[in-house]
Amino acid sequence: MEARETIDDATERAQVENLVEKNASEIQETTQELEKLFGRAQWEDAKSAAIRLRYLEGIERAAKTWLDNA
Image (cartoon, one colour):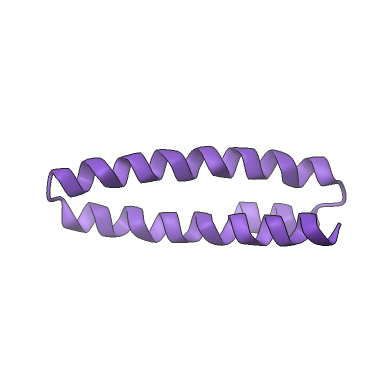
């Protein structure tokens, strides 16, 4: 939620670029976590991680849209 507010309130390109970098790192970490969870057949935890990944991808799309329109 905080990331969306950062995008909505951003006045400078650097603010959103920093968020994009942080978010990309979180996407990578979550993807690695998912791989481990699938390997261990921890389906409920994998479901939660997949939901988090979907949220992070939404942030990525919103940030890229902001940057394209800045």
